[in-house]
Length: 246
Ligand SMILES: [Zn+2]
Image 1 (tube, helix red, strand yellow):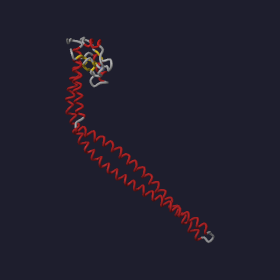
Image 2: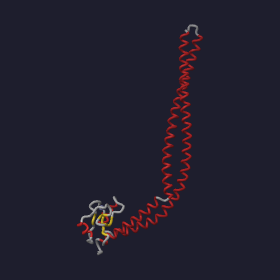
Image 3: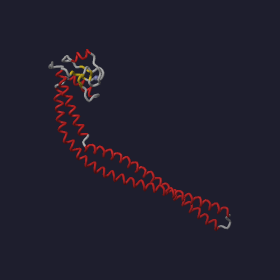
Image 4: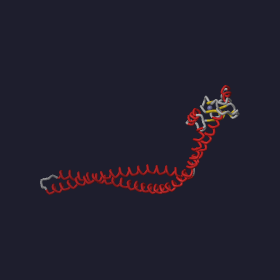
């Protein structure tokens, strides 16, 4: 029943599909070696640590800027106290001054002192926070540095694995282009279109059904399947069909 066209074209296509599967399996194996898994894990870990460290260092920068402002404010308040204390001294030595004026100034100085104490308390609180954040930053940094060492180490193994299988993949690629030359161009186009949706775009008809999507095929289509040069596509899923009976 096998002719030069039709089914033999499909046989070549099936061989192509099989070879492509082999390549995929190889790539899949390469992607899931213990070294590659560790590599991926460390890569994610390092990325996350980078984000964390950036947040911590932003936090430190923001709080340091706030501290600088508070310290400036304390200086200004101290200057005002100095000024008003001087004034108080002058008034005290002035016989014409009233007790009321002095009380007013004392109250003012007291208020300023309270404000300074409050700002200093706030400064101390932020300083403690900054210290804690710096400690955390150093800790994450240390962990990240160790992870980076591990990452660099495992990368050597991963690169070696890649290099080792590069030849095998190259050989399969050569095989694929050789097989491709024997496939009808139109059919190959259909196959490639199918590959965009399905890992296996060429499937056998089993029990009158497309084995890709399990759709029952109409009789007329099953009959066409037996003709040598027909290329039948499943009406439901678009996969290319072949008959196992031939
Ligand atoms: Zn189907």
